[in-house]
Image (tube, rainbow, N blue to C red; front, side, top):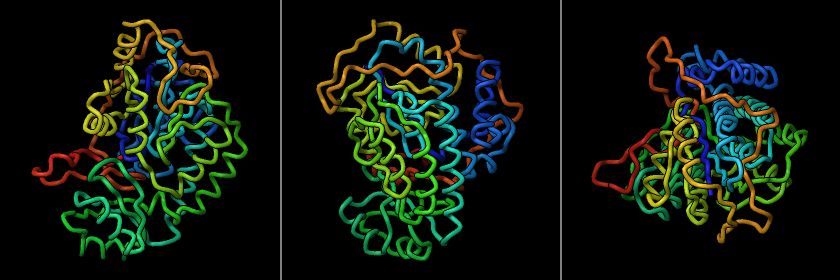
Length: 374
């Protein structure tokens, strides 16, 4: 069994498509997606500075585009293998492509609509997000709820992100839960909360007009980590996710129950790879940091014969799925050689992060992560 995990907003870096666009086939794909999504992905993925790609309306289609480029590159080696897909926040659109539910162009287009709608919703009220690190989960959740805030993201133990009105977040920072620290995050608004309702409505209309195919792979839901079995349920969950918490911790539990032989962490891979290795070290994970890493995945997948054994855990009873073949014929050439950006890529700022992971806690708390936001 073969799994993929797809990152969410906050993991982007300048020049992230440069290596892919050296290949003329992939460059043509990205130009077509840019036209369909009404966003210049070539510019954003090669020349745009960190501040520009950190804008919600830019980040979301850019991340999905990179993830589905990897899908086309991986398809030949992954053919005939059971696929399990999970994506963090907007990464769930990427995962839907791997499960055969969405076409690449529709996933990128929906990500652009979602990003623009969420950016617009941020202007409706003074909202933000803050990471709560440490403390007991019960006390952290009680304090968050007591202030009228929402626990918007659960990345794992010691990683809960609160969201809501800026004034309420300031109260949380002034009086944190016992044993916890609170760090305000430089984000555009309260993502994955009811403050995104107008964005949910806009995204719902776009999703309703888009064809969702029956899944040919196992798609794990951000809501509860369970396998989604029908197009209607998948569409509804993707829409509801805009205003509901991301339970990435439950996605990883679902993945661990299915026990894939290899989990490929799609680019940009650093954050989700670190979370998975920390919480489930028993799972083999291979990060894809750039186009050059596709060859490593091919090598790992081709060392053993494909296996189509049906999982014994939460998988539905339909026949064993395989990695969905892209709508357009996947290129048969080898993985592209990356282009080194002309300028050193700066560290991506936290601004406009959709669903950030909690920051590092003091060194004494080993169970708490020390990696960037998602």
